[in-house]
Length: 307
Image (cartoon, rainbow, N blue to C red; front, side, top):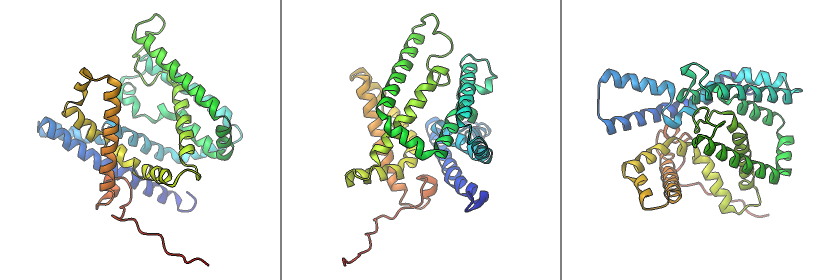
């Protein structure tokens, strides 16, 4: 921030978030009109502006990201002022997260804080945001600890997955003591260890894939995945919608559901990757692929004669 100032900080991030967000909101709104047909113009216009404010399906995460950018100066101030007390900060944050999740799971908050609206509210992610900030502040120390204890962390993550799934099954089958709230509710205290464990596992996977000693083809694949991940995230619902339209879910009647699910994931990921690679090389790449425009052919490395 110090190099370019807050104006540069917000300009760059707003360009990286607002432009793709608005572009894909228009695309998905048009897709909805194509599927359902034109209705009352005033209602359609109102629905469009509601999508801009609340986020269409997966685009809600960009709404949360924009909220974080708006409070980032205060967030940075908090991390700096509590640098000697980060354990206390995380403990308080964990307690707040558990209370928030409990109140929402039990429907003890206003309606505007429940269900879909809850996914659009930054405070529901405050523990994970603060944990990320603390890790960044102590990056080398935390990174080294994670690498040294990766086996135990993966075992703990597997335990949180099993615990979370077991809790869901007990709640879904109305076992006494587990029947409060919606069993599929992502905002319930029992899910907090699962989210922390999955974040840790994804970080360790990234470290594993990003090692310098990995084969060149793997490093190139990881780099491409990182470059195009934003566009894949933005465009994925196009292909999910197409799969549903062409009847992919009906394959569960003739094939095991894990095969259908895995096949759908592969198709969506491959199609979204191909579309992003194309969009990244066309005008307007910042709005459609979420990255600066790429050349059609990669430039060869400059020749350097041996000495």
